[in-house]
Length: 128
Image (cartoon, rainbow, N blue to C red):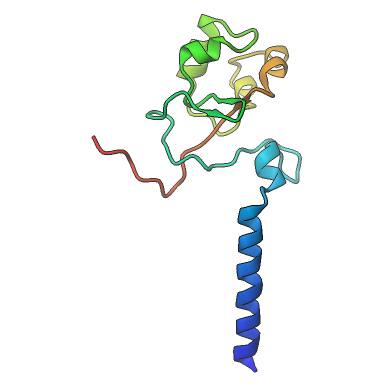
């Protein structure tokens, strides 16, 4: 009887894992957690220091974007883009306001266009 329950539990867990992989998690895609705080998904396998200016869909990754890419954002000039680069890495995009790199009004203009990806914990470092 224990083997039957174990087998049933294994099938349920496997089905849940398959469903989770095929259906994006709302918290990971919206950047919101259940408590309403901003969070970012850590799906990037590249480290922020070595990643090229990466875009996720239409969103610019503030942890790896070039200075030129950052300056294309509304209200972001050379000085602000340099401050963004100097403040890397970011765990969440709202850290731009928390670290006083941009004002709340500047952040409101760009928040839908940016994302802050993190390197995964098990990612391999690039060979030199």
